[in-house]
Length: 74
Image 1 (spheres, helix red, strand yellow):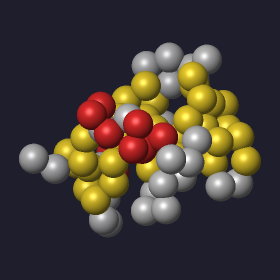
Image 2: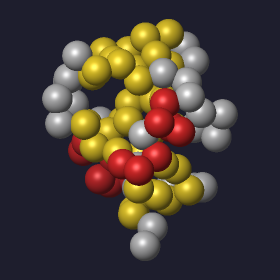
Image 3: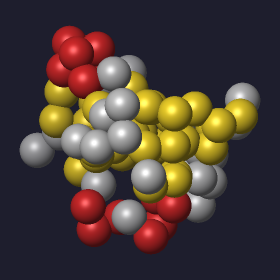
């Protein structure tokens, strides 16, 4: 199982795409189960998206919610 934690946005930058919600957010789709070490503690996810906030912390977003609320920036 992969683990995402603060600072991983720099390492994963080549794989991240910009998406817009209210502000631009860097995120990527993760099709397999993964672990996010969020600011509130570790969260296990079955798949979906991992996004990074403006402080570099990762947070998981369910795929269905992501597709309804985020649009890719070209």
